[in-house]
Length: 373
Image 1 (cartoon, rainbow, N blue to C red):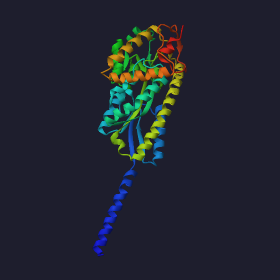
Image 2 (cartoon, rainbow, N blue to C red):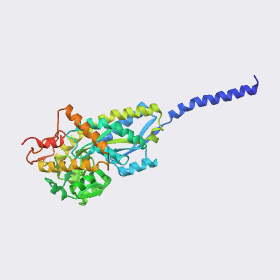
Image 3 (cartoon, one colour):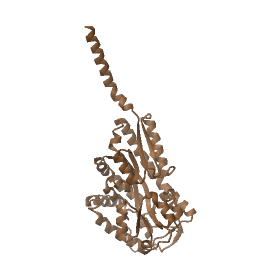
Image 4 (spheres, helix red, strand yellow):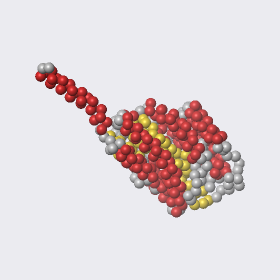
């Protein structure tokens, strides 16, 4: 063999070695995912997300890490989604309002007065989640496992005992929330469109004198300190999730992406348990600070429920399809059949009472308000 041929083989061997090593080098590259959230630093949501980030970093030997921009540092949820599409962020931990900016049909899981219990919502959402994950992926987003906000109540400076009282409020309306906007229009409520970061200041200034929120969000965002009353009737059960762009996923190896998904899934389950307990704890905080829960009269519950159910059908074909509404109703009815529960009987209920916001169990929606008098 000539010297030139020997040298050529050495070069080819070196090139082959580099080619074989290249995928390993690519897999070894570190990936930092930039994630935005409205959740304040130190809140239960961020505590769980931070622990999940640390776990992912540990299990991937530092190859995958998360950089969180919490507390609305990157704006409102509309800004998050826009920045993800521009490549300025990789993902966001958002409410269903943020999710709706990717695919609005997911709001079918948040219809007002749809569920009697958190367990009922769990059953329905778990059955439909893979369906929505596929829809989100076709739009360039990985929808991770379901997070939670919790039961949403009306909070106000003046007592609300009937729909007429609610109509008299200058009530915050999340400007990007098409579903709640439709609810307000149906009920004739006076909505003042604002972003989430604007609510606290406008409650203080008096531009608005009422809002809607879960107890935990009201405490975390300090809204509770500007109101005096909370309805015992929840409007709906609010969910959320983390979304990450498909392009960001491609930065990770298949192995690391699988680890990240497994950690996210396990921590989403933990998050739901933490948020449910934290919502009950938040009620105690609100009570100690003087917020009073006003027992919603049955007449108001009946009226709100009737108009909400009409709205379910009104919005089919606009926000979600008729088929998607049927999927929710079928799964809900399936749960009720398995657990021998049914829609609460109309006409029975507790007399109106007023009590402090105490750490009571999560409401079974209309059912909880209709214990026989």
